[in-house]
Each structure stands twice: as structure tokens, then as C-alpha cells.
Amino acid sequence: MTLSFFDQFMSPTLLGIPLIALALTLPWVLFPKPSSRWLNNRVLTLQSWFINGFAQQIFQPINQGGHKWAALLTSLMIFLITLNMLGLLPYTFTPTTQLSMNMAFAVPLWLATVIIGMRNQPTHALAHLLPEGTPTPLIPILIMIETISLFIRPLALGVRLTANLTAGHLLIQLIATAALVLLPLMPTVAILTGALLLMLTLLEVAVAMIQAYVFVLLLSLYLQENV
Image (tube, rainbow, N blue to C red):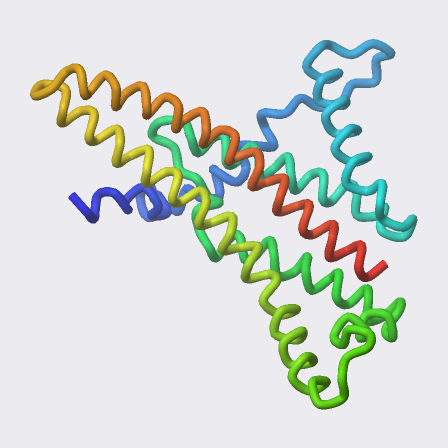
């Protein structure tokens, strides 16, 4: 029983072929492509409104040089939201529960922000390692602490996204299993458990969207420090 709870996080295969590639490709198929018409339909209008609002909110405090990242970070957020939401459907696989994939998103983007900072403004980038007014005896210790905190950022990004989604999926499966077991024994308790499961599912929908937003928001803050 314990092993079956974690089977949902195993990468599915069909005839020895990993299906994670299909799961990563599916979000791009679901979104409609912009048309050349003057008037779009409601879906395209809503999509454009969401993208414009998100980009404006994220990139408003960032300098003009960081606006080149708008298309990349906006696409990343839509991609992560879609993967997280599709993973809540029955008999589906959530690629963002894999730490390796989340780290593959986090490490290159974080490293790109650090390289941009070191190339464009190295003095300002290195100044983050030592706060102003630090006493002389504490300088080596603070430099070590700030360096560790700098290199732990991509790990925190990947682990945060993985842990939140994994915990939510496990909790949903545990409560659903409890409701099925209690249904023939204590129907009233099973109905209450089902209501709790419904509320937890709604919470997981919110978590799926919030975690994608937090992932991109933290990347934009790292970018803001280096442009």
C-alpha cells in the first residue's frame, strides 16, 4: 500500500518509451494560436489579457535591460501552470513532481541571471556578497554565508515546486483512499471525508497556480538584482 502511493510519481512508459515527452508537449497543443484578424474570439482575448497583465506586473520594477526576458518568463509560467493543472486530472502524470526536471528549469535560468550580472555590472553583483557596514572580523563569515545562499537559490526553486506538488498529490490520494475504505463501514464519515477531499482539490488547484507564479516571480527578482 505504501509503495502504491508513490507509483504516481514514477515516469510512465509505454513499450519502453518514456511518456514524459508527450506530457511536456501537450500544454503547447492546448493553447490557441494568435490570429491575424482584427477581432479575436473570447479565448484569445482572455489569453492576451492574462499574458499582458502578468508581464506588466512582473517586469514593471525591472530595468529596461531585463525586459528581454518577458517572453521567456511568461512562456515558462504558462507552461508550468498548464503542467500543474493537467496533473490534477485523474490518470495523468505531473512532470513537475520530478526534481530533476524542475532543476533543469531552475539552474540554467538562475545561472543566466548571475552571468548577466557579472558581465554587465560585476562590482554591483559582487557587492551582494558583503552588506555595507559589516564589521571587519565578520567579513569572511558573511562572504561564505552569502555565497552559499547564492548557490542554494536554484535548489530552493526546484525543491519548493517539487515538494508542494508532491505533498498535495499524496494528501489527495491518502484522503481518497480513506474515503473509499470508510464508505461501507461508516458512510457519514466517508461523506465528510469526501467533502474534505473536494476542498483539498480546490486548494491544490490554487497551489498549482501559485507555485508556478512564485517560481517565475523569484526568477524575476534574481534578474532584477543583476540588470
